Image (cartoon, rainbow, N blue to C red):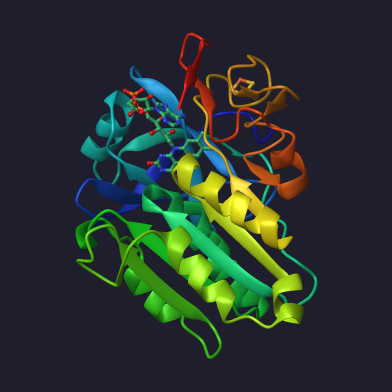
Length: 278
Ligand SMILES: Cc1cc2nc3c(=O)[nH]c(=O)nc-3n(C[C@H](O)[C@H](O)[C@H](O)COP(=O)(O)OP(=O)(O)OC[C@H]3O[C@@H](n4cnc5c(N)ncnc54)[C@H](O)[C@@H]3O)c2cc1C
Ligand code: FES
């Protein structure tokens, strides 16, 4: 059995994260432990198969995905109960590159459901003894997720910041603005030794990429594209002009790779494969 074989798993727990967002916990046999940034293809028999980032993994072999109800398949997932079965393929794709240098200044910056892979990354960084700063952005307070987990992960030297578009919780404004302000407090040698991990709306990630480029800061961005096969066969998730496949070469891309992607922040593809503006 390879990581690309569908495995039927039973839902062990369901957690309501916020209105319209639920986490599903299951156990899956795998030769490889999943790494933060990787995803699974989730199959609902008779409905569809869709990509979902892995939101947590623990030593008891429990995995979780965190799903926003946006359409047919995610709605069907939200209707499932504890004890129901789903099909899982994975872990698929690559992972965030964790630096060797524990003194690196690390930022985790996410928006909305984009916090999912960053939550897994945050718990891994805590396990490995890294300090980091998280900036979570959402439209309104009720859309903020994982605040309880982040409270538990808080260690000396790590920070968790929140911002909302309407100022209903945390700072009023965008995560990119909070990040720009935080950069102003850094000494030149800290600035040089900074890395940013991001996932969320592509417009936010593209703005972060521009800020990072100007300051010569490394960035790892987790991109989303509509996927069909999830394993490099159909080409639907290709990014022009270099043809990187989000499912196989990504979903996490480095500064060097992002600089070569004309599509990043501008174009995506429909289910038909047709390219459209974002
Ligand atoms: C690598 C990766 C990781 C993802 N991780 C998560 C996650 O952790 N949690 C989560 O809730 N969602 C995640 N998504 C997005 C998720 O796959 C889509 O929301 C889901 O496929 C929608 O299926 P649906 O049948 O419910 O919606 P549909 O009825 O098919 O479509 C509803 C809306 O969602 C859009 N959409 C459909 N598929 C995708 C897609 N693959 N990416 C982005 N938008 C899409 C459609 O354009 C449409 O606007 C991820 C996507 C990728 C590529
Ligand atoms: S989804 Fe088929 S190649 Fe990526």
